[in-house]
Length: 199
Image 1 (cartoon, rainbow, N blue to C red):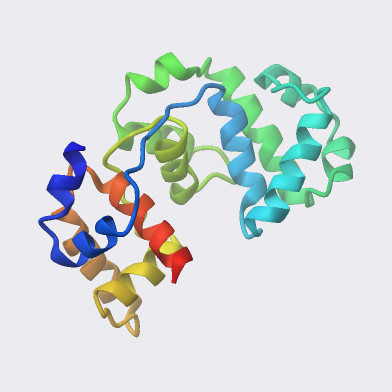
Image 2 (cartoon, rainbow, N blue to C red):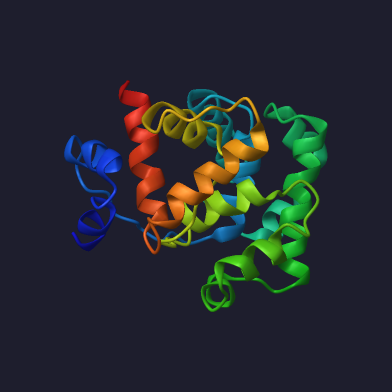
């Protein structure tokens, strides 16, 4: 695969790539729902997040809801599946924003990564990291680097022997290293996450 050859120029990353299978980016539909799922999973383990998302889908008979259905869901129902007050509000905010701005996959696919980040971070409860995850896992963008992601920080600290004593310097070092991975930074992140979990 083309990205492997490019990323293997980084010797340290090459050792990670050699130990893993290639990854594929698969764009997914229903961006509004994926963004809601991302909000629900914040600060939760993958296992708990899955349970919560499953309960959320059960509100709609196990089917994927459209933005209008999410917006119409009573606040108490969202609280009832285990969402905090803030998260229930943020889920409503996302659905309403998608409706008000007539956002769909087509519209987002025409926009650059930064334009998508700029648009969606206007929603209260949606930060840059959340949109970066959406770009990677839902829109299938190839060149996203999530500098604020804890897993990526842990992996790069270990792999490149970085010092995170000074957060600003640490992130700058991460950015410097990752700039060489362009235009395939999403793939690098995916491999680093898997590598960290294997350790």
